[in-house]
Length: 173
Image (cartoon, one colour):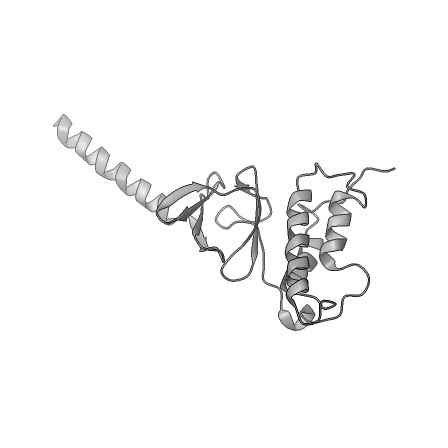
């Protein structure tokens, strides 16, 4: 009788593990690989060529063009536990191809989060903001007219409205 009870518990525990795995959120990265986020721990892993490892900190472009931000191995705060915090793909009609007047959206974001002279370079959101700026500059340098907003410019427009993660640098000179 004990072996039947143990077998039942083993089967039921296997079932609960398999159902929690299906609850994980996943998406493909543009550069290759699949990101999986555990909804309980918010830990992100990447699987490439059958090898799974933790997803490194920073901004990651997903297959749908949206960006996901990882800090200390976890998806940053902002959304429910069953979906990672993503900057949704902005509507291209609203911004893409529009002229950049003054600072670009990613330059504005970096100045706001990191400070105009990197006074807040150690802030949690500074590195992701700088990565978005690097991505924007790369897109603009490859564009026919580099004075226009790019896809990543739109991601920065969205990030500028995310005051919960991309907080303003409060260091004064």
